[in-house]
Length: 415
Length: 84
View (cartoon, rainbow over the protein chains, first blue to last red):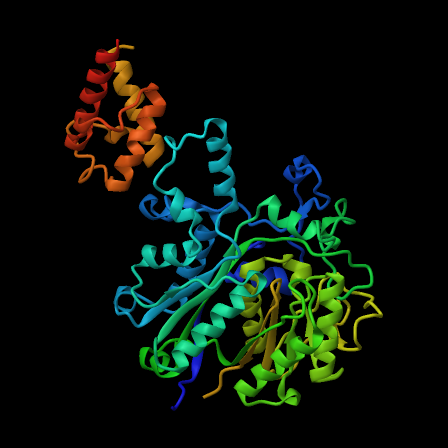
């Protein structure tokens, strides 16, 4: 079967830097941190991490109440990101209603804040008499995908992969495969998550959360750094419009990049501890799918969340596949870990780096942990290594608790 | 509670819950065609009214006959009068 080429024709972001892809990219290129001290975290007993990368206040009323009533923050983020991607891709009612456009948007959990509100009320007298009809729609696992589809009357396939930190990458990978195989012409792919202290606590209790920089939040997280002390949770949503090349050319859409490879490989050695050999195999599989070899990859956008086990394992995997020449950076120092959104937000940034020929180094990385493998790390002060006339290929990693490994390969679009 | 206070309480609760314009709260308006509510909203409307007036109305058959904002005003007044 002849597979179709799959390109990106729209991108949308709600990130800790604010609303829109332009805000996301300017924060990254300007090497700003979106991490802030969160006083509300101080009221949670047992929580040691007091910093997070929250989405600034948004005008949520731009979404009509009829649709917004079934949304918690994560769906609001996803809908606003999807709207931006659709606007850029010039997607109108005709495409939405055609069945040729589908939605693949996932989250780590459904809305924890909504669960908390419900059970706080329910626990007071075990009464369901105050339960409103919108509750289920915020708690169902496909809440983001369903809300995006309902808001824009998108009638194609709807799926909501949920693989924690690899969710965003999985949606892009599965969307790419569906379009390549001809099952859909277009897919809105992405991830979304909303902040809740439980999310930070999940990593804090595993001693994987940052807690030593509460008084200087913009200095954490520190991927690959000798001085890192764990990850910082963020929130937001990234959505990419994937489309078959033939459809994009027929519509005259602006092409922003190309998805040429994807792999997902499950690590069954341990539900929490990553195995660098499986990570390396996942990257090799993605390159095989893309029909490229390691020497062709100009840049690796690492998952690198600033946890000890994750950073070391990923660095060793990258070294095993690419050696020490290929440029490597992580965007977690800027954005924190936006969890299900991270794969999509970081892919948006990676695609822009390919287009512009300008790489973003790892914020807060000055001294690499000696236990990390020797790589061509892009550190804060590496301004001379960031620009090049052309970058052609980038590989994007995301790895998740539960043993879910994903790698995507992007190519700068050329006819 | 006077009749006017009851109407104001109902209108305020619905304005807040359904993000309506207070100036639009005229009794002759259809809650469906004019105020834009649907079947899910009417279930939530019952919960909002139960919260505002501390009564139970979910099982009242009359609720299904409500079409206008004025119908709500009259229904709540009858219910409160019956309980008085």
